[in-house]
Image (cartoon, rainbow over all chains, first blue to last red; front, side, top):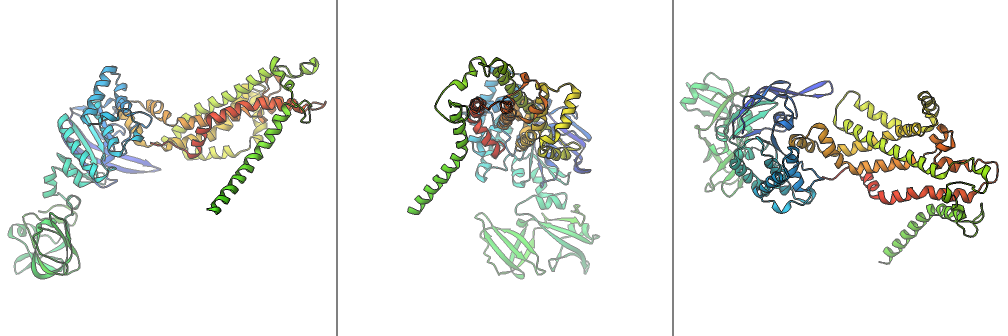
Length: 359
Length: 281
């Protein structure tokens, strides 16, 4: 079991004469037995980071440590990592048994030991009856279980997973997701998991590193990221439906600090007012569940979606912008209603125009 | 219903005609090979195949017979040319195509397009240059020389086709094998090669048949009759001053054809896959 540390790691792809900086000065520590999710939109460098840790790419700058050992130049085969891919990457010309046994054969283990480990891995994933099949004879969910079994049977120091659930149907995805979490706990193995799906990240991770444009923007537990996003990108990326991000001007009227936005002026509570008093243009962030609606006002209910557990409403502000609002189902509203809005100021955040958190 | 039936019948008629067309010369060839008369199809005899007993042509005419090599030697030469060509093309194109498919290096695109151009150059325009090169290397009038030339001409197509096969294998599989503990060469030999097997079979078969049927290079570069291949032997039977023994030509041609037909029957499924291309995961 291993702690992984990335120290100022950079990697640039060559494409013709120009280089594309996929990863820039990345610093990240993944603790022993931790489930770390690298979350970000496609092209943000998360898969490159994973391949750097796997050793398929070598860092052009900086160092990668497994515990206290520098592994920069170690070949993938010598790193003892187990990897699972979005495309499953099973070997099409081998049966399930041969697929799982392949890395063990390369380790030159005895026949009995290989057999024991394969049997153990398949029983963990409940795919005992698939051993003689070829990958093309399996469903996506089954193939991904085989890929997981192959990674587990190796008994690796680290699991690396590159969007392993993205190709599966919604129902099977949730099933395999739960299984993955259980296995990771059971085996107690350092896991680095790449995804662009924030819901998946939230449900699996001990900690999440949010990445964009080759950099890490914030590292924290799902809760921290949700309640205290360090910048606009994280605020907008985490949460479903996404948070409302509203351009606002800080104004003072009769010595009271207010936010002028959405075509209205909204007074701020004192604790927030004292911090933003000297700001000019800011971005106001509020999650849909932290907005409440009252009858009569300048806002218009634009649409109402009933989701069983909650109501998702769009509300149009006087200046034409819309806000997403999540309400309890006992709230009686219909499209076309005139309403006023209340923010739960305990959970709002205000960011600079450049994206940094003010409060 | 009736309309469909007429259409079906028409289809069968067209198919029948199309299938008969190539069969006509083949039927003529077979009839002639068993003909008693050396020029016309007449009667039935096995005497045209007498050469199979001793390997000698015109066994009843020693002066004439001495002009020709033993046909078993000719068969061996033809086989060596075919198998040598096939092995070299497979060996080189399977490795070269992998590198071209997977590695990014300077001149890759130029190399690829030059392959296409080389494939388009008619072999006959190269004859003088090749003659000179072989002469310089001391390979003129040797089977090895012909094999090397033939291989060089067949190689571009092989590389091109196999590159397509390699391209169709996802990178993830290769990365997975690297992480699973193979070296880069291990990935190639244990994972990639087995996956492009259909392509390798097809290229091998093509090169074998292409070597087996080669005429122009043998005609140009081989002077001694003991180094002849079948194509050369059959051609030589036409150039004699005396009357042409068509029946003998036909019987030799039939022997020459048999391996081709056998190989096509065996290899058909690989050739069909070649036209579809790639492997399914």
